[in-house]
Length: 243
Image (cartoon, rainbow, N blue to C red):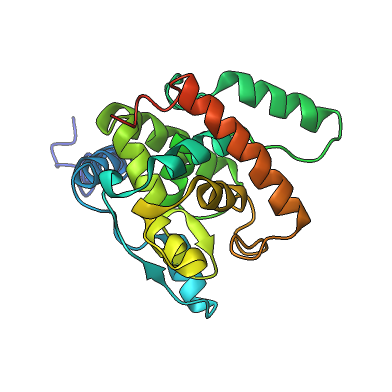
């Protein structure tokens, strides 16, 4: 005779718990790594980017903060040409990444020469505005992503405008206007060709070199940049920025 007694049921397990966790994680990942960067780039297309991670770091280090935003039309074309000559001669040609410069940098590093960078002005802008200092692969990945976003969303003229207003130009000094006032007691719109070349010359080491009282190396570098800026003007290499 069969046992008619009902067998006790096991407690029901909650269904879909791990699946819901994965979906939530995915949504938050999309928000953090896709939506938020796109939103920030869209906002900064029109609004001046606020204080950056590097600025906060320098304030903590006791170096102060002097930054005065100026529209690109109020910054001397001489400085635009000098910066392009010094930092990224192909700025108006590439789409954010200078493959030729990257290959040369890799070759130089592979041969054990002094470390050379292949970062474009677009990449430097992405790093300065949105990210933290460092050389990790994670940061470089974010840098590449933001570089693509600003190239698409901002265009060259806006990238240069943000760059010239955010770059570090000395201890606690950020942007062309603050740099011009600090070094030459003039506005960014009134910089001479020689002054512009000096400011561009110290960009690789703004905490070490001085534009107002340059040493022999900076004077020599400024002279080369001044000559290269003349080429930028003659060949129209700043045409994507200057009207």
